Length: 352
Image (cartoon, rainbow, N blue to C red; front, side, top):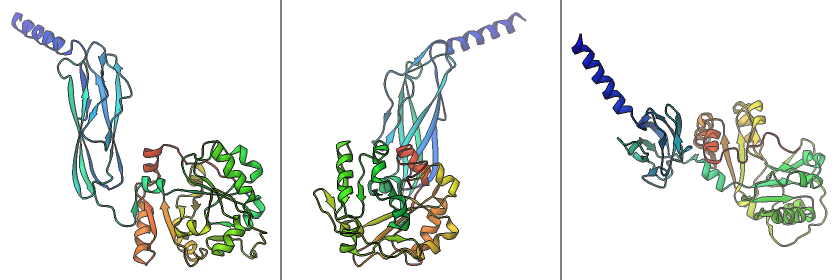
């Protein structure tokens, strides 16, 4: 009996010695993300727990093995028994066709393991020609803003343009993006010049008026990318007004871009990219068939987006096989957009 008591006491003392002071436990230590398409940002979650009996401190941010990986610590201190999540991001852009192993070195005041190495591993598949990342879409993104009345906008407007009447512009100034191109237009360009000036003064350095407004557009490229309500005649627009810091219609139509959101109307209304056209998958072929002409120098790039990229990429592949060369899908869908950019440019509602 005395011998058993001695062994139990020894084990108790041993366990107490091991747990004395701060002690870091990480689950998992290896994160296997399987196979992803190039351009995807992998989001790996490691749970950090202080299983010791003293405060656990992280004296510095984790060190990553390359600039493609980031691991910001949410807390610098954990009380005994407390846990937190370390979220590690790996950007797979440029790693297509490669097996990946990335290390994250985590430093703490755990006396038994002051440095722990966490590992991400998996395979990055090369992207297909029709697959594009959220960053590709973001850096090519621009927003067309129609400054006319809602009635004029409903009769006809440029494909993918949003409607913000010039009289309501002040209410939208804080909402419009500052770092991405904004192209304003009205009938003749006069109001657009004023709108672009206001936005530039508020920090939107890439705000421009379309030269001559819709009148200038029709003179340069005719009805390219102009969507009209059924039975509506070509509008009478007046005399184009020109000024400095404008963008020509020719420049826009050379690489005209429109985002097509394939989700349900309810999902679309809850948050979508501004200017995105909501077309459910069953109606996409019909929508493509009645798109306005591109003009002699025009080229239309269509981005299909959905929640996770699955349906969008399936349809993009099909349309490519049918000869539509400039149809792309957002790899990983809007989930990937949120990982990269949070809620930036995801609007719950739109003017008009």
